Length: 442
Image (tube, rainbow, N blue to C red; front, side, top):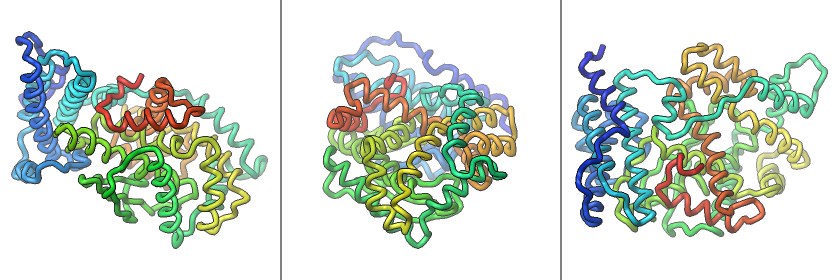
C-alpha cells in the first residue's frame, strides 16, 4: 500500500498540469532554444525512469545507450518523478512563443507529452481516472460515444449481406463461418504477408522519400494480446512481430503490412528520426512513451495509411490478383469478402464502448467479452484476447479508430481528398514528419 504522502505528491503534480506559473522573464530566442533542448533531454531521462515502473511504457528508445543503462540502475520513487515532471512542464510553459511555426509545434508537443507523462505517473501511483479522463490526459483526445442502436443498424445490414439468413445459426456464427472460408493456411501466411509488405513498400516509395538503408525483420509470435506490433530499433530499422494465435484472414495481410510497415509505423518512426532527430537534433524523439499523444498520431496514421496506399478499389484488385492465389483462396470471391469487410469496418468503435464500460467498472470482463461478441462480432477467442488488451493497454483503444478519423480529417482539410491522391500523399508525409498533437488535427 502506498503512503498518503506519496499519493498526495503524485496527485498534486498531476493537477498542476497546465497551471504552472509563466511569470518568468521571456528569454531571448537563442536562450529559449537552449532551454527547450535542455528540457527535451530531461524529458528523455524522465520517460526512461518511468519505464522502470511500467514495462509497457517505453515503446522505443535509440538515444545514447548510457542513458538507458543509467535508468536501469534503480527505480526512482514515483513522487520524485512526479515532481520532476511538474518542474519540466513549468519550464516549458515559461518559454515565450517561438516565431518559427515548427518550433511552436515543438514547444506545444513537448509540453503536452510531459503533461501525459505526469498523468501516467499519477496513474502508476494509484490515481483513478474514468475512461474519458484517462484518454484525454494520456492521448489528448476523447472518443465519441456510440449507442447500441448504431451498432444494431450495422449488424442488421451485415445480416442481410451474409449467406445463411433465416437459418438456425446466429449472426456471429454465420460471420465466423464466412471468415473461415477466407483464412490463409498457416503454411502460406509468411509468403502472403511478405508479398503484401512488398506491394505496400512499392506504393509508399513512389510518393515518399525513405532512407536508402532502411529495413525490418519479421517474426511470428504467440501469446500476445495484440495481432501485430512494430518495435522500432532506431537507425531506420524495425522488428515487426505478427501474432499467429488466431487464424489470419486474407484482409489482415494488407492491414498488417500497411499498419506495421509501409506507410505505417515503420515509415512514421523513420521520418521522425530523419526529419527531427538527425536533421534538427531534437533528442526528445529518440524515446517513444507508448501511453502518450504520440500514439494517437502513430496508430491513426498507420490505419489511415491503408487507404492512402490503396485508394478506392485498388486494394481488392490487388488482393484478387496476387494475394488470393498465393493463399490458395478463390479470387472470384474477393469482392464478396470486401463488401463484408466494409460493413464490419463500421463496427470499429464497438471496442471503445466495451472498454469504456469495462474500465469504468460498469461491466465485468465476461460482460465486456459478450459486448464484443454482440456488437463487434468477435469470436469467443478474439473477444477474450481483446479484453486482455483492455487490461494491459486500457484506453489506448481509441488511438486506432478515433486516430484514423482525426488523421483523415486533417489530411482532407488540407486538400488531401480522395480525388487528389498526390496531394493526399504530400499532406500525409508532412504529418508523419512533424511534431503534431491530436488536438491540432481538428
